Length: 541
Image (cartoon, rainbow, N blue to C red; front, side, top):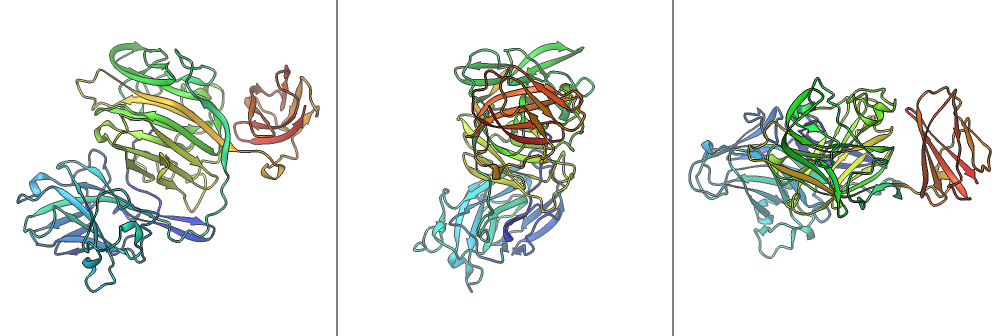
C-alpha cells in the first residue's frame, strides 16, 4: 500500500501477437511520438509545476493556447483504433485559474478523427467533460457510454466505426480567442486490435478460500490476524497517523458485512499515543496464482486511505502474521506487493490498482485506475486475476490495468511465490478536522484457482515421498530437505474442492499428520506449500 503514480506498461506479448497500449506519461515511458499543436504551443517534457494531489510525477505536457480560435493538440495513432471493443480513454489534467481569460466554460474535449482525410474534422466524434480548476483530476472519455457529438449528424455511433486514427484534445472549447494554459499527464488507451488469438489461460473456477462474513461479532480468527504492532519506530509507513487495534470498535461483522472502522479518538498503545484508530487484517491463507474477488464499499473524506491488497508471504515485516510464523526471508519490495484497490479521499471517485517490485516501488510507474462515481455509496466487485505471466485488475469486470513485464526476473516479477491478503483503512495527516468516523465495508472475499481434475494439470515432484498410500488416519510426508518451519498442507478432492487445510512443522524433513479421520474416503490432490517451494501429490484414502 505504498503511494504510487505515473503510468503503465505499454506492450503486452500474447502468443507472438502484439497488443499495445497507447499511452504517455511524458517521462520516457510512452509510445506516442507524434504530439502536435494546432495553433497551440506545446511542450512534452515540462517539469511538473504542480506536484500534488493525485499527480506527483516529475514531467507533464504543457498546453498553451494564447488565444487562437481553433487551438488544440493532437497525435496520430498510426493505425485505426478498436473503438467497437475498447472505447475508453483517460488523462490527468490541471488548469490553473490564473492562466484563463474570457468566459468560456472550463472543460476538456477529446475528439476522434480520421487523420487520413483532407478535412479530418469532418469525420469527428467528440466527448466534452467539465473540469475543476487548480487541482489534478482524472478525466475519462467512454465512447460507448458517454454522450457524444458527431460533426456529421448522419455518422454512425462511434462504437460502429473503425476509421478513427487521430486523437485531438481541446481545453475550454473552440471558436473563441480566450487564453488558457493546461498541464496534461498520463494519457492512456488500451488497444487490443492486434490480439489474435489470446494465449491459453488457466480458468480460475475452483473456490479455495473465502469469507462471506456471515457470523456477527469479531472477525474469524481462524482466517484473519490483527496486525497491530508498530513496525517503524513508533509509527506506520507512509506517514499514517493511526493505531491499528484488535478491538471490535475497529473491525466488526454485522449482517453479513465486515466493517473496518477508522475513528477519531485518543488511544495509547505500545508507548505511543495517537488520535486515530483503525484496523489492519492479514489473511492466514496464502496462495500463488488465482482470482481474487472482493465486494466492497469505500469511505469518504480527505485523509482516508482504504486498501485491498497483497504482500509476499516471505516479507520480513515486524508484526505481520507470516513473519510471526517464521516465513520472513525478503524485505519490501523484494517480496512483491499487489494493490488490488486503493482509494484516496481527496480524489473521491477514483480507484487505483498497482504493483510494487524492486524494479519500481514507492511512487511506482506500474499502476492504473478508473472513475467509480458510486465507490462510497454502493458495493462494487474489485478483482485481481493473477496469471503466471501477468496481473489483470478490474472493477465490476471493467479492466483498467494489466501488469505484464516483458522481462520477468526477481526485479520485475516476484509474483511467482505465495502472497497473502490485507484489508486496512489508514489515516493520512491530511485528515479533515471534522472527521469523526468512517468505514470500509466488505461483503465478501473469494479466492479461486484452477480445478485439479486431471494429472496433466499438475506438476508432481518425483522426489516427494508420501506414505502410506492409500492412507487411513495418519500420513507421513518426506520432503527430502531439512526444514524447521511451518508448512501448509491442503487436501483437495477430485473436483478441486478444499476439504481440509493443516499447518505443520517438519522435523528433519518429515511431516507427520495424525487424526485424519475427518477426511472422507476418496481420491485427493495434496498441495504442500512452504517458504520457498510448492509440491503436489495424488493420494487415495
